[in-house]
Length: 113
Ligand SMILES: [Zn+2]
Image (cartoon, rainbow, N blue to C red; front, side):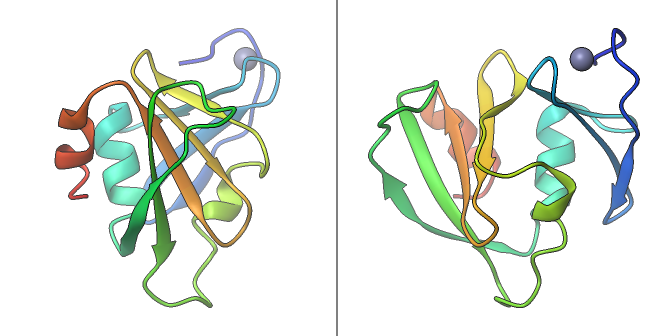
């Protein structure tokens, strides 16, 4: 949790999200990082694995909203930048595709990928 900077939480799917642009961290006020991401992107479908070029971890999995019109959960986080959720998990999006980067295959199983 970023306690250094005064970032305003955004509520999506009942989850309070704080994306600190200064720390590059995304945190959840009422969930841990895995639970927060799982709740936030519950309706997303895995598209596949992508090359981890420029990514902060070796495994990168791409997701899309089940309905292409439903991008509001992604909008809670600034686009085109990796945000760290915890020491093992990062996220990035471009407004249509969500990328999760992580160190362990276990993470993708936890996220249902
Ligand atoms: Zn911060």
